[in-house]
Length: 211
Length: 211
DNA sequence: GCAAATTAATGATTTATTCAAG
DNA sequence: CTTGAATAAATCATTAATTTGC
Image 1 (cartoon, rainbow over the protein chains, first blue to last red):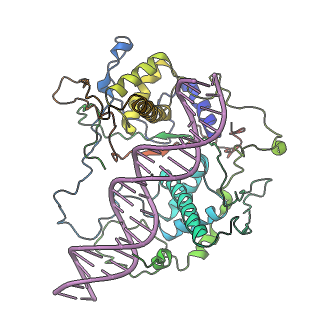
Image 2: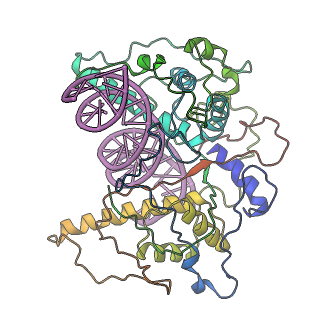
Image 3: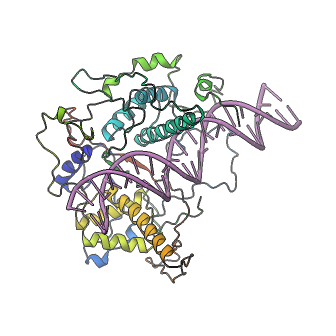
């Protein structure tokens, strides 16, 4: 939990009160504000919590495709991340280099680098590693089953990409078997997306339609 | 199905370079037209990514132990979140009310409310729901096994906490079985842990000791 | 050739497990 | 033992490839 520490420490000073400045992201414009303060805990106002959360999520229902059949392109916030070749290339390189579960800081850096080649967010990087790792594992398992087995990977020789001249920063190859478990602390946080406006106070979410 | 295929290779071809016109929007933020992935990649500076990543080195032998002033976050509160009674109470209330997987906005709000009763972060709320849900499920399963079974929840009269006076916001109890699946889009992001301008690039030292 | 219909990949979420602090 | 935290496995959902009928 390295990053976490940083985080907490920093936050400790202001009790995570999104005051101003801080500059990194837009802070929450204005929380519902809720007239708290009035009473005690019991007064806890549920109303202030739940939000409609946009929702519609476009179901398949009426198809309103009269628009250009061409994919309407990633409007900020519409579709899913679609990595470019460069991005994939870099990610794979890092993966081959041994990276498996980057921590928050690493993710942030990777994201900012990859951002040069196309739109991308931290979570995309995070998911990419999760998925890639899992799928490599599957693939491997399938193979090992089909082909007798050849257990320990042939020690592919890698490589330990050394990246920083300073001492010890190497990516530990982490043997394909992947480390057993390594509790890492990824400090993350939810994004403040504002939206504002209506705020219909829909109580509990309950996403319609399952699956 | 059947033919394997080489996704990646295939992608290399730019056969679909559709109408450059049409999309006023940039279709791809801008793909540097790489001619050959590898070259580009090479230029990529790994140094900027990987960092010693101190820490977790799990079971790390004492080898790299030197300069660690034990500045560990050591926040008095120390490591993990320790919920107060009020916080738990509210969370349980929400849970009983039907909330199971709050989205980012909800989490943010809940967090900010609970913050009044003690230190807390969004992820704590997130994890609480995950764990509580999972453990309730376990508990239930154990019970159902021990006690004949009484499969479908006894339709117990629940509750539907109505919190808003307006029409229809009731919590649908969500059948104890919990909803099957509900895809929600939780938009989150890694936090910018840059706080304060300085930025000595001292990113990694933080996280000494991974737990 | 080309666009709808299929299929393969793979991004994004959720659920199940595991680890470990207290 | 309880439960916060984190990771892995299982799934869902959407996009690109590929195939197919005209």
